[in-house]
Length: 247
Image 1: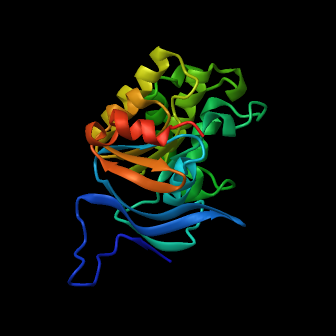
Image 2: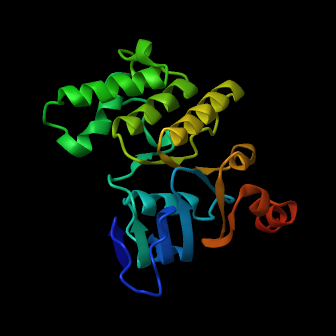
């Protein structure tokens, strides 16, 4: 198993793919006694939005966890061409409603990777937090408790936490699940603008409409990659019927 960060390949027969932000080769991962991902080989392009698509249990969240560095692969190679660690936005339901955190405190946690939870944030950190709050349109909610927010507001707070990390790779797990159409549209527009500003975006999603607006798509089934490329080529009627066939 190898995880490489911003290192060119040394083999003359395998030149680095300078258009890829992430390159996976034969990647396997899972949990003790439960393998999930099997021999995943794929590329995730730079400065683009990529959708990870598949039914429940297909391995989307596990793959996202591997890309985020929170789940170690058991074998295979992962090459990361970014210059900063990825920013990971988990599912909204993974963050407890009862945590005594304000919106600002939640977003400030995005700076902990650089400073640690006990060190005072710098002026630059506070500026990054303010920028993230403004970009998500939630500056007026900064003093509100996270548990008091609507689903869309809370999701925007979590995405703002990811933006505060100022990474060039943003990973999101089901960012629009359970949200109303207006909230989904707002988050979709934000992700598009982030790509235009130089961020590579990868989201795991059940929302086929959102997936079809992405620049690239990885289709998973039972922990295996069964399609990759432009959504028009991957998310065909026949491919979706095979992946979502009744058990």
